[in-house]
Image (cartoon, rainbow, N blue to C red):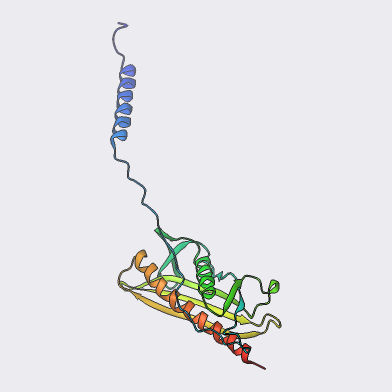
Length: 220
């Protein structure tokens, strides 16, 4: 009588076998690898403007330029690559990102582009600590991939102020608001189109800065 398997013991035995089977089956399932994160950056363009003539017999004049870190609008203060399928909707790419926040990448690119110019002695952050010729302050409003009817384009909006370092008066204001068509709606094309717009925007920023510096130099 004691050797007989009771219904309760039989049920427990069956449950144990089922659990072992489930565990073994789970171990045999393939593990899907996590999608690799693709990272993109924005590089400085390579425009080279002419030197600014000096008033003396020296071949050229050089100036210190103050360039504050670019401020980003809400939604663009992170390294996320943002896209929009509706005017009120802004979403990040899941498996792609910028190397840093777009404003930080643009700040670095702008500083490098300015520093390459023959009329620039250096680029500093704070106008109060150096005898700078002009102070530049910029804001990034948007850098996004807009998708409409299976067509995409990159949209870059930024604005800048040029200030007199002594009086703090506004010397000039400029707004860049341009789009670049994309042949495909993906992160790689978004990064490529963004670079085209960044090249155009920073080239214009450098040209405008040179014009302001040269104008101030020739003023009585």
